[in-house]
Length: 102
Image (cartoon, rainbow, N blue to C red):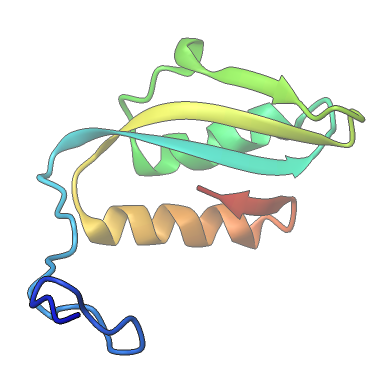
């Protein structure tokens, strides 16, 4: 059976698949996960405010893990460029309290 539409899965996918692009400025949602503590959300907000002065903390959603060991802080900020996002992610990780930024 020969079918030109089938491809060998051992071969890399076509190189013409473009990575998604972001058009700046835009509203950019992120989720920050860290150990559960009373001041974790405030700590995240302080870092985000350094990178986006127009950040509205009232839009934050905090979700506790099933065992209450972790907090997930979901927020949306105004992203102005890739450099801003990289710096924000680095500052969040530098706090030592953040396990993951998605």
